[in-house]
Picture 1: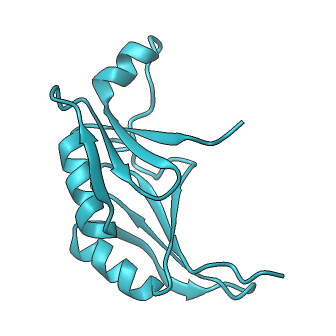
Picture 2: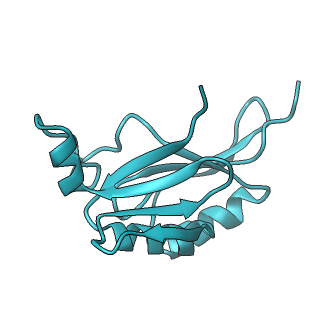
Picture 3: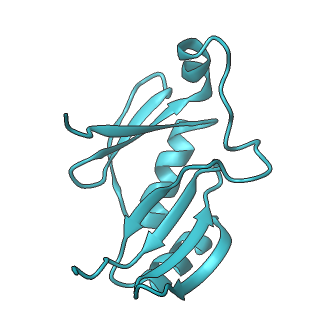
Length: 131
């Protein structure tokens, strides 16, 4: 078994790709001509976005839209950075909502949280020191 990709269902795939490129420095790998699916280069695991309409097709009973949820969903994307404060400022400058400013955790890791315009919850964190 290998973790291949994460798909985030969003209202506007192209807008989410552009935001993640600007806010986090990822590069676009692919945007389908329909605009309903796209991918970013994000290391070994692919970060993908799909239109809510595809989610409606895949889940006949519906799904929870992060962009209309008053609170962040109970899952997050975590991005590791050597400079969490700078990464946090860049994300907020690009349009993310600050949920938690960078702070050092008891185990020595620096962590912050932002919510992207499409509702996605993102953790920005420093690498965890090996034990």
